[in-house]
Image: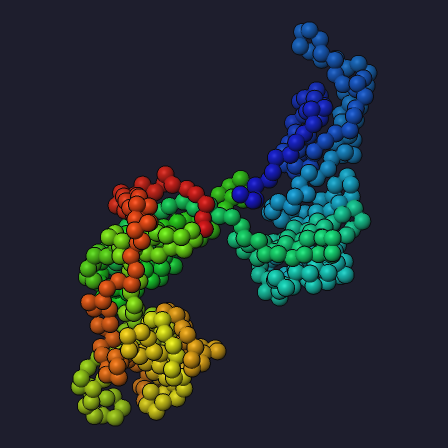
Length: 475
């Protein structure tokens, strides 16, 4: 882990010097070494300035009085201390410091209303140096996007030339400007995180989001949980009070100054839903390093050909029907789709992989996108307020790729999307798309034994809550 102070080596002569003097000086100087980490080596000290130990364990001084010895040690420490940590390990912002070689370390953290340049100038950094840093780092980070709490660490050599500038815009990454043979290079570096497993079990009261937040867990897990079962469960329509859920997930930490700091939740590794929409269980498994999917315990994938809905919506305002009273035209006619009510601007996504075959205005549909899928299926997304940037006819889209945004263009009484599907030119009920369809993918035979091991361990932890034994590197 990258943020604890690295241990500094202290020469044996330095240890003898500290050990050989009065308790008061020993404590204060040793504390300085521990606190600042600035003492790395000592210059030679004349032998006659060292204490002489008698056989009875007491010490006498061969020459100079104790006060002079103390002064000599203080001068030796001050004149020869060097900053061993030129490896530029990240530390909390602190006032600037100067080594005996003349190099200078400046640390800072932005407060509300401050800019990077203003904090640098408070530390006597010249406008020319500020411009050099800004220009060097701009390709990876724009200082105009700096936020209160962002921190930096700057290293200058004895001539005042920039050695490096490290900017930390978040807990998880650092932007580093370094001196090189050709001038300066800049890179974004991810901070390595450690993971511990956490289990939660709860019951839905009013919503999954509120239930998870009320248990003290990050509510972002509600969306991740719903996404796992998005092919089987419509959490807006099917979720009921009293439904149960269990989640086994990663909690991600970093080490900072020897302490663990919680960053955010990681992946959900196993999940179970038991309620009005039935019982559903999922485990995460990687058949290839870094490429994982969610599977049922029998090895079948949860990812089906079609999602149950093209958005996160507030309610179904109109179901698929062969005879519906049209709210604007006031006539009874078929409604070959499902209307999902949502706020204007809510993202819409493709329910399956396919190709855009229409993008534009189409009468009562208003702004419309049509996507052709395998097997003769075509999906319709009507009444959009706008299309996704760059979307065009002939473009290939992936399942859950955003294609536009909810609106009320065309014949619409409020913001919603009319979602329709045809098969070989005839309308079908979108809610039945995945019925009686085989799963797209299952665990390969070559990976089956590995899958069984991972599945059994995750399901045991999901049932019994034993995840505290596990900790490892997060992906």
